[in-house]
Length: 143
Image 1: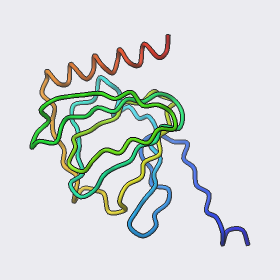
Image 2 (image 1 turned 90 degrees about the vertical axis):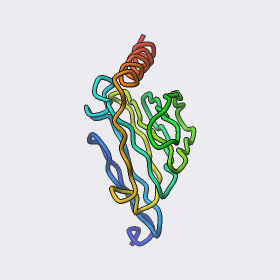
Image 3 (image 1 turned 90 degrees about the horizontal axis):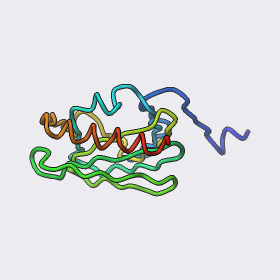
Image 4 (image 1 turned 180 degrees about the vertical axis):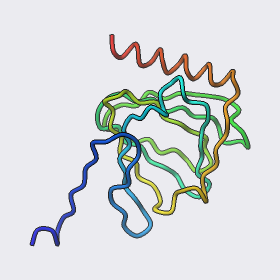
């Protein structure tokens, strides 16, 4: 009978996993995966039809923002705090750096996907900057 009233979902694996969809929105879990290790980040993405919300639940995380021009034209970083809501605005280049124990909740439009997501390869200069920033951030939090 309780299954008529509540749906309970969790995710303990790696990467991104949609958990609940309803109407026009979706809630997903994001956990560390090797592809977003600082030495592997070589691009950013942006969603052309929606904002995207991130909520850090455990671990440590840093958002990397690349402006909202045609290509990434700058990189700024924001250190995430557990329990704070980070709303990445539509058309904003972004990526996320997570500790291996991090768990992030993502809220977005249910139709967010390849049809309305663009990717931008980072220049070697931006890759190096982001790797240094991310490594420094992760090292400082483990000391």
